[in-house]
Length: 180
Ligand SMILES: CC(C)(COP(=O)(O)OP(=O)(O)OC[C@H]1O[C@@H](n2cnc3c(N)ncnc32)[C@H](O)[C@@H]1OP(=O)(O)O)[C@@H](O)C(=O)NCCC(=O)NCCS
Image 1 (tube, rainbow, N blue to C red):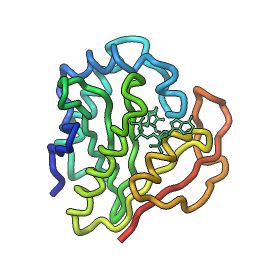
Image 2 (cartoon, rainbow, N blue to C red):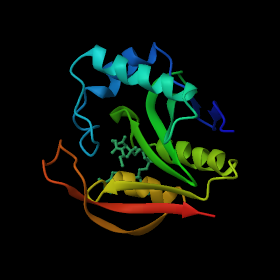
Image 3 (cartoon, protein in one colour):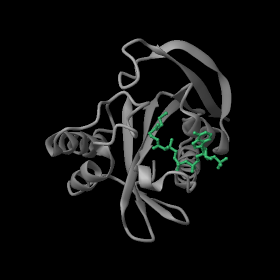
Image 4 (tube, helix red, strand yellow):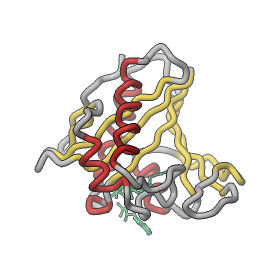
């Protein structure tokens, strides 16, 4: 099935551990710039992040549920730092991707490196035929990551998702996908 640990040149993606909550809370969970185009609000307490990590850990053991969510913590080989997370939600023959990175690590190609490796790992699962993601039309960096990872922009989905850090109204997203 899916690899628990994915190694790239500069990164190791692995299942979450309890100690990750502290690192994630301190590094990006409270940062409003990071969650701007995400569906969650910046965390205000460590307990909030601990809950997210507990749930993420449970996902790895709950592979019979539907949909199945696989969350990896992204760590940097150079210094061992926890720099983000990447999740894939498997629904039948499709995997939908989401990701987040600490602001100090933006712009170094890390998420592109992580996503390319996850796409490779997902293609090892014969039942998966489509890997896709959506991003806010203003989230230029995320759109680039999806493009650089080999995904095609399939279109614009109007009023698709509420990014409450930007607006209470549903917003348009671009839909990206790679298929085989
Ligand atoms: C989106 C995110 C994961 C990108 O990670 P990253 O490791 O910095 O991405 P990469 O370095 O691989 O690539 C970013 C690309 O976007 C480009 N970019 C970044 N900001 C940009 C901007 N404001 N305008 C134009 N291009 C921009 C970079 O130049 C780079 O493209 P290039 O390699 O062609 O120069 C990171 O910014 C993040 O965590 N954002 C907050 C969470 C989020 O929005 N997640 C996605 C939800 S859909």
